[in-house]
View 1 (cartoon, rainbow, N blue to C red):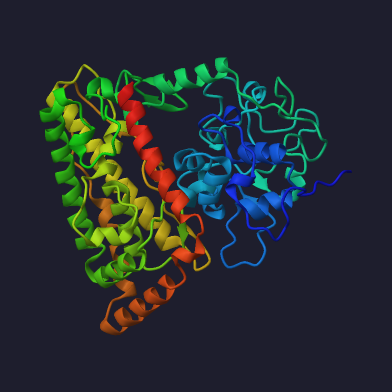
View 2 (tube, rainbow, N blue to C red):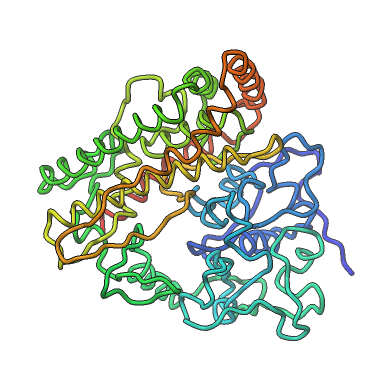
Amino acid sequence: MKRRFNILLEPTEPTSCASWCWREGWHIKGQSAFILLAKFQRLNVLSSAALTQYFTSHDDRATPLQQTDLRDARQFDMPRMMGMLRLPLEDVAAAFVMPSYLSQTVAAATLRWCPQCAGEGVHLTEFQFHSRVTCPIHRVALVNRCQRCRSRIPYRLDAEIFRMPFTCPACSCPWVRPARGFDDFRIGEAYRLQVSDRAVSVDWEGERLTTGEGSCLGGKHVEVAERPEDKWPALHRGGRSPQSPLDLVAPDAINRWESVLSEAYGHYKALRRAIMRVHGRQHRACIVKAARHFSWRLDGCTTTPFCPAAHAILRWRMKWEGVGVPKALLDAPVHGPLGIVLWFLLYAPNPGSQYSEAAARRIVIHAFVSACLGCFRSYFVEAVQARAHDRILWLPFPAHDFYRSDLLVAGNDCVSGQVRWTSLSETRQSLDACIGDSTRRIVHHRQHVRLLANNSAANNQFVRLASAQSELSIIKASTTTGAQ
């Protein structure tokens, strides 16, 4: 058996993103980390050991892990993947199962694929979810066993599987048969059109909206409607970076969008006050200390766990306020809440024509508040459950790294029920218990400061790259959607 060597770079030479080959024609949005790394390995003739060395997050380990779960983004160096694959942060994040702390629960540990997509050299992250049993493109059942020996292929990065990643490691039967051969993974235009048509008709649900007349899709009832910008005016037709929500709005809809965004921002500020009152009251010193410590951009970076309340609140505020540097949260805002604007642009549901404008607006605001609460809940649970050796990933919009729930709407022109606040008080007792008296509070704060010291900008040599590509992806998303 031939052994592959790195003939272009010395082992001691620092990894440079410009030193590697990548072809844009080999990529399509939604591809999994498995197929992205396999294509990169094929194009650059790398061994599995080198692939693991370059892409996984080493943290404090001298050598990388021998087996890496391809569902969990926290085990990979995402800024380095952005540079080496020349992809925006949104596409790199979509290659993994989100949110990361639920990846082992909601996604399969063995490879699942569509035979027709495999003919195009494509494997989508969506195939790994337990809730997905058919291909969303071809409507055929997904395959989870080798067609020859009936064995399963583990969904991880290790030497046994990535020695020949496109074949079964047990019998060498290929599960991918690209039409142009294994040295040409160009994705055909016909397949790209199928994916884009599917994205238009299905993926623009935003927060999943259920009505009595919905169609059944993947076990869930979803109303398939036109895009959100058909209900809410198109955004950001200019080319400059937005400074406020109104800069993203078409001139003929300023008054309408000003009212909707002002109402949404008012709800967000009310939620922020409630979260600080319930979870952050005794952790204000932790929050301020952490914000002052992180004076660099954290887009796509990971940090070690520290105070759960500070960790969750900072991540939550950075997501919805569109801030990349935690320290900036202590200063006066220099722009509007860009995260809220992007949620309305990308994820806001379309209630449909059966509702009046007032009822539709109330439904959208309700979905926005539910998304804010669900986002904080995901971040808080992840921070509480994190162990000392775990890593927590910081992702801005448009990457979606928190759990999304369905929204049930009943009636013709009304919305029954009010926003539930249970997620703010469910874990209140566990937080108060850890800093109940003054002595515990001092110990907790000292431990928090010690854990913060494990994180520094010097640990990530790709901070500038992540920052630039993250800003580019946000501006590109708003410009592309507005142009449509």
